[in-house]
Image (cartoon, rainbow, N blue to C red; front, side, top):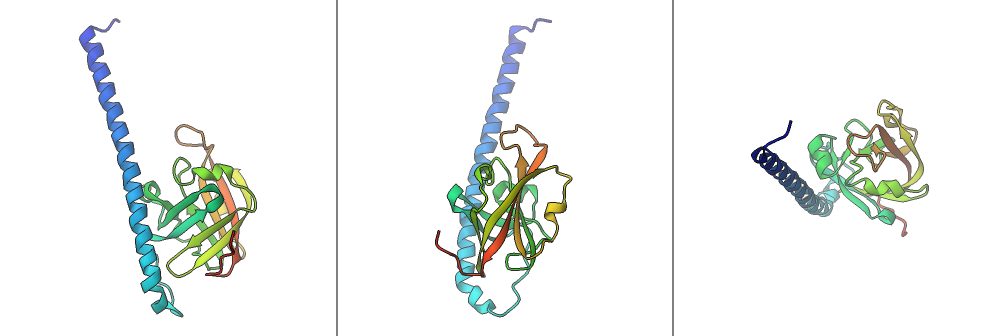
Amino acid sequence: MIRSAPSVRRLAYAMLVAGLLCLAYVAWAVIDARAFQAVERLRIAHAALTDAPRRHGVEPPAWVEGRAVGELALSRLALASVVVEGDSPENLRRAVAHLAGTARPGEAGNVVIAGHRDTFFRPLRDVRIGDLLTFKTADAAFMYQVEWTAVVDPSELSVLRPADGHTLTLVTCFPFSYVGPAPQRFIVRAREIAAPGVLPVH
């Protein structure tokens, strides 16, 4: 069936509009994420200056869904992101997310952080054994060293379970170059190597 010229023009126009809307959404998402990161970094810094001294020796407050709880960084890869409590789609669009129910930095167990492979966790494709990560909260700063990486199926939940000692697990989709929902997960496991607030120069 041969389409008439008006039909072809209407189809081309519809595709153009759809493409422009997609570009507008991507631009908005990037701007929104950057604004969120900037605002939350300032809030965390302010909390570190004003709240932490008063909380000395006191049980830290509960982490609230959707609120920033700290910053994660791996300087060698220029990876830096605010960490938000809860892995909702909105949280993962704006930052990396601490999985509720897993340990918090400084606690014995497994601190689990999830992030998208095409945004904040994209640098993890070049991660190496021995790389150093820092997780700063308003209360303290923690350092972890990468021990191993693995590629697993989404159904492999053992990597999220509590671990001996103080560990940090990063989770993102794999392969990094895959288009669409990726079929596997890339795991980075690190172990705490420095006492809170004691960050070696590197």
